[in-house]
Length: 561
View 1 (cartoon, rainbow, N blue to C red):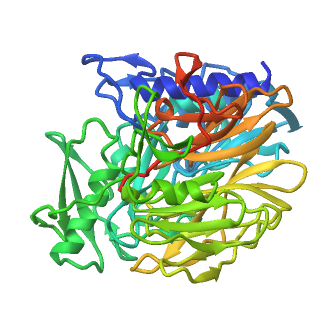
View 2: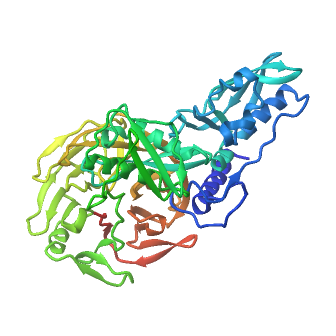
View 3: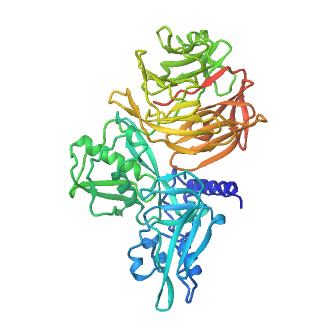
């Protein structure tokens, strides 16, 4: 099977997991609907793997071990049967995973008792459950050494972690978002991780949460857990659907900090189906504090009605697509600038308008202010702090941000390239996505935004989260939700593709409408809208696209607040 076909099947399996959570053999319980980031299911599910056969060859033992490592039940009990008694207690199964293409996996016999497996990687899983794309497709050699135990071959040495093909990976591992705060403590920001099994998944989640955010995300988020806080005992038991978490170490025990710690734990365990509540203890003392009056939120949903320019009117497009309701005090100001794109602020009180003269800031009740007059600017960004971000297409490193007062500040970017296609900010203001080209290919990158307590940008994180090169010609991107970015690309024939990339996860690709040039923020894929070169605004309908409005000059979406 070709690699692209394998990845397509893998993506379908991931969708099936997300929608149903059903993998393996049901032991008991009813069938239930899935939840976002589906993980634990109330069904008890297992992948059944056999132990070693009598008089098995080295190759059979190795094959059996790799296959058995797909079952994490009882700390990989079956897989450990393929190991020598000494190595069985030493093998660190939970040290991550190498995800490869089974059809490309080969072996080299090193000597009479040693074999090297050559794996072609498609991803790697770190010890803390972070999904990473490989830096290259070069094979990874994995060494295995065999010894006889009572006349039977067993593995005496093996790499830490497991080797698993990409199809089996989505059967064994499930995605779980950990949550950290933005600097204002208004939003919970997801940091997606992958864990295997169910018996201890809530323990894995809490321990990963205490260890902190991913390196690339860390500059943009805050954790309520101070360094040195530990989970004692190192387990999170669940009784009556309540997870008990006992923490020790130097941690503040004031009500606000406890509320924040509990909010992070509760949100991070929400994808574990058998957990409905959390009992938090610090040094054995139950922390019984009330919930805050305004709980932190994950990324709020965007306004479902697009904001469009049609004729000489700028306003909300009716659901029927027949009428545009102008925004009072703003519509005429925006349209007088002859805009080519408009970024909308929260509550539709501020707008970053791209026009032939540059990027201008338009506020309700105020005259437009020209911010950036540099040539060849990409569509601007207006974040949740009403800060405008602008960069020239042919100067990817010349990114500026403009304060509410219009003052410009240069900010160092971690990417290089000859051209930048588009930028977009997550609705919580913690992550900036960009399409950057080196002249040969265009890549989606995401970087954390470090901010002060008042929301002003301080710096961009210097560690990029990179994703595989986007095929064809990427022209636009948008955040679909708190952890998903959509990229619209065009082909020489005029057709389009939409690549949906989960941060810390996999990408899926579907066809877009012909002539698409701008993809708009949506509440999930069904909320996506695409503007075409002919002025049609298209929405997904079944496996195709349907025109919902025509005569549109530009379109944008009001983010949630």
